[in-house]
Length: 276
Image (cartoon, rainbow, N blue to C red):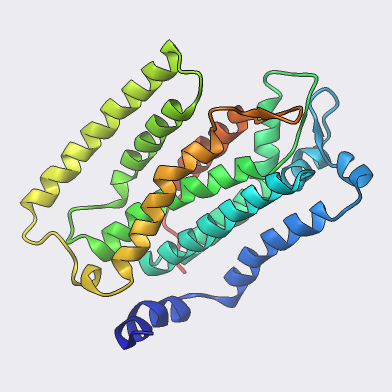
């Protein structure tokens, strides 16, 4: 390993990480695998029945998977997004806020998403971690802006620019939903216009700055982390909103996916600064 990387990026990541955070991050995939290993009859009792909802199943359903592909997709999504978001938080000095958001995401968001799904009662059951994965995508989007502000930019980016990422993601989500309709294309166009407005404002500040990049951005590992986060942000909507959301008698709950992203982003963005 390159000495500059070891003494810079990785050393700072290790010293900025806390064991309690790592335990929390590891606990989620352990729970997902453990629940998947339960007998099918037990898991059926944990899913969320829209016509006979319970508070317990409103929570447990989000950790239930019956199909190995479904589990692996959600595990892969988590293992990409959660460590990336945490690394961004460490370098941005946002570990405390990340900790609060993460705890809320795995404790309160499941029940919130289930409750919001009751707005349209359907003779159907719901289960799976996808809505929480979209919440992690929102956290990653917010943190990549804070990371850029604290680590990469020379003062032209700030946390207030986070809505740019929100509206870019909204554009990508609307374009990913199939079939394209007048409504989805209108949402995509509207979100793209708002995103372009934010991008123009950020671009003007960047051009007016004496320097574009913070010295840290030129050190190995730091720009690469932002690239990984941006690739995840750009590609994940296509995974969460596939062209064919049906298969094997199941239908992806795209409504939950959208709610997971939007609710988490707004809540995390509204959270005030927390001292570590």
